Amino acid sequence: MAAIPRHVERYESIQAALEGREASDSSYRIFIVAGNYSERLLIETANIHLEGIHPDSVIISSDMAAGHLDQYGQRLG
Image (cartoon, rainbow, N blue to C red; front, side):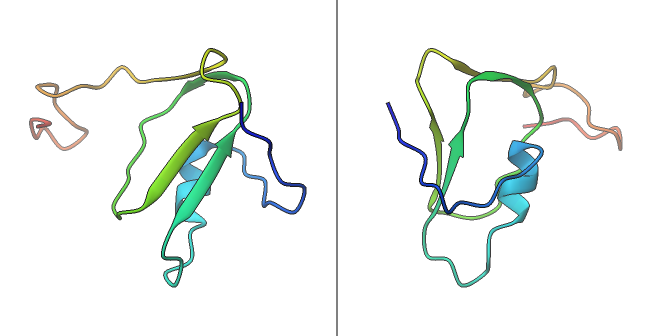
């Protein structure tokens, strides 16, 4: 189980936390509190660590998957 440091930034969504990463960060850790998250995450850089407060209490899901069409009609791969 992860302990969340007191001095961390807080965001409204996981994607907002991903977008809050500074370009100078060599490694970026996102602590996720318990809950169900229905989000499409766009991770465009290396060394991103998504860490749930407890593995059984964080669920990230989306209704999009490889083979589906995106908003532009392009097939997701």
